[in-house]
Image (cartoon, rainbow, N blue to C red):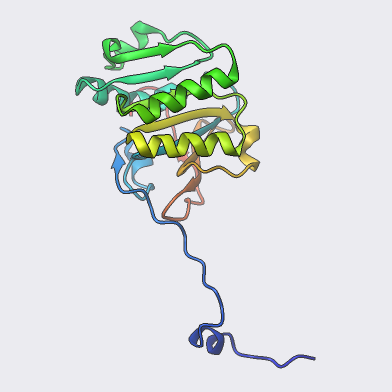
Length: 208
């Protein structure tokens, strides 16, 4: 039987590697949902990086989640790109939420690789404050390219994917999952810089 050694002696002797979580992104952009911002290390959407939103299906409130931030960006005359959405954005609905559609560019990309290419270019360009993308087929390498592009262009990147991808590793700084059962709520799966809360966050219908 090997010798029993106290863990404290190994730590003091620096014989055990102690992992540290990756540092949180530099800043946060308020999401407009106070209960969500309260649990995020940056107090909002992490800037210049990707935020991944996992869904059970389309149309469960994913746009409602991001529209408050998009409204403020468009009010500041900053441009927003919407890449390959599953449905055409409802102009009246977006404007009712305060988004100026004059500052929204919608890009149709029928092929998955085209959507990824367009998203990467928009993120990297520095011309867009936020880029929303629905990359139905994106492996780890493709997501890392988007992450690097968001950092280069200092943009908010939002990617919407099926929740079946939750088991896969992701380079996104923030991963949220929208749940509809037993009630509508947000579960933080990953937030760089801190531990995700163990409890879900209520996500009511209507305005924050």
